[in-house]
Amino acid sequence: MAEDRATSTFHSSSLERARVDRNEEDKRPVLVTGMHRSGTSWLGAMLSASGQFINVGEPLNIRNRQTILRSRVKNWYTYICDTNEDLYLPFYRDALAFRMHPLYDVKRMRVGSPRDPVRIPKRWASFVLGRIQRRRLLIRDPFAAFSIDWFSRRLGVDTVAIVRHPVAVVSSLKRLGFAFDFRNLLEQPRLMEQRLERFRPEMESALRNPGDIVGQGSVLWRIVYGSIAEDQHRISSMQVVRHEDLSLNPVKEYSRLYEALGMPLGARTRRTIARNTSERNPKEVSQKNPFKVRLDSRANLTNWKHRLEADEVERVLSITSTERRKFYDEASALPPGLDN
Image (tube, rainbow, N blue to C red):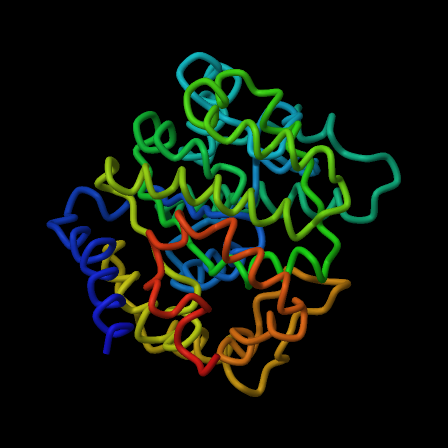
C-alpha cells in the first residue's frame, strides 16, 4: 500500500501537472535525459514509436562523430549555460528547424569508415522528412542532465528525465566496465560553481580510486539525480518518470507519458511497446551491444541481484540515500515492483 501511494503521488507530481491545453504546444521539441545506463535509449525509442519525432541521439557524447554540433564536446556531461551558449545554441536551433550543416558533417567523416557514408545521409534524409511532415525533434541525451534549465529556457523543450534505481544503474556500469573520470566535471568551472561545488570532496576522493566502478557510479548517480530533483521543482515543462514503473506496466505508463506530451497512443504504437517489452525478449542486454532496447522489461528489473555482491548493494544504498529518497519510498530501499 505504501508503494502504491508513493507511485500515485509521484505520478501526480510529475505527470498530471503537464496535462494542460497544448493546442499551441503539441509541436514542442522534447529532451530525453537522465544518467547514462538509466534507460534513455529505451525511452527515446518508445517515444519515437509514435511516428511524431525525428530522433537525434546524444549530441553531447564525446565520441559522437555525427553530432549536430560543429565539433565534438571535450567532457562527458558538458554543461551548457548562458555564458558558453554561443558554441551550442545556433546548432540546436538549426536542428529544431531541421536545417543541416553538410560541410561540417563531411569534414567529420572518417576516411575509410563503412558507417559514416550511410549514417550522415540518413540523418539528412530524416531532417528533410521532419521538415516536410512537420514533426517534432527529440533530443535523446543523458549527458544533457546538468543543462536541463538551459534547454528549457533557450530552446523551449519539454524535458522527460528518467530515473532508474541506483543499484540497477551501478550494476549495469559494473557489468560493462564503465568507469567514470570525475575530471570531466571538475574541469568545468561554471558547472562546479553553479551546481556541483558541494560534491567536490566526493569527486576528488573518487579520483584516487580509478578502478572503483561501484563507488564512482554511486557518487555520479547522487550528483545527477540531485541536480534533476532541483530542476524538477522549478521547471514546469519537466517530467520525471521511473524506469521501474515503465518496466512493470509499459503500455499503461507510456500511455500516461504520451498524454502528458500531448500525443495519442495509437494501436500500432501500443503493439510496438508491447513487443519491445515482452517476456519473449532477452532478459539482459548483450555486453557487445548494450544499447539494444528490446528486452523482457520485468525480468530486467532483477538483473542487479546477480551483478552486485551484498556489500556492494549496501554501499550503493548508503552513498545514494539522500537523493534516492526523493524518488523512491524509503520503506522499500531496493527497486520497487518485484519481490526483493
